[in-house]
Image 1: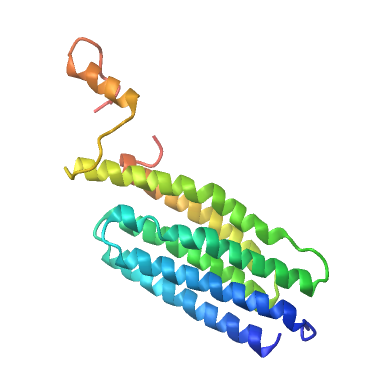
Image 2: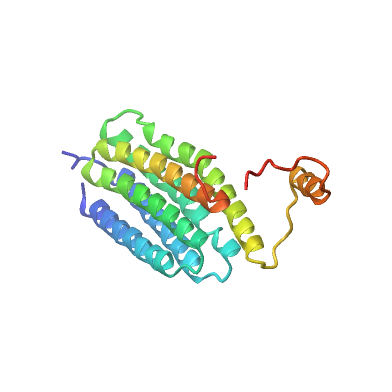
Length: 92
Length: 134
């Protein structure tokens, strides 16, 4: 891997973590519960993109499977939290 | 291991990765700075569509060049996101509408016809409106 690609990967990882920090600010500050759920969902998506970038960095397939798992569990978690906000219980 | 990748592979991969991270940053900034919750629901779509597509394309280009054959499994991520993200967004919007309506804010009224019929039947005491179990 050349210097160009590894530097680009480092820069994009830095920008991803900056985005995660901004999302954390919204997560802690969020005036309502649905803001916090939205920020948590966005944290999942950003972490998944970061996993794919790390997979390119280390040229390994394992990170792709981790990203797939994060996507699945993020969907289930956000679905359950939104359902809880809608009805007050997860399974009716 | 991969020192022989040509520059014509690495430049698009680098550009796509930087683009994806910038989309994620713009989404986070928008979610931090917009005023209303329903405005704030829009910026995350930037990362889950354009950001995911760019990083999946970068992954496909890089691994296809590395293994000198098509490696397409990274497409699973945008496909999965395009199925799951609208479901979460719709449910969160409905939850926010419901909570704001319960809090007495000025939001549009319920448009579900079944709910309106249920309210109409609950208003006159004749039918057995004990389906809530309260």
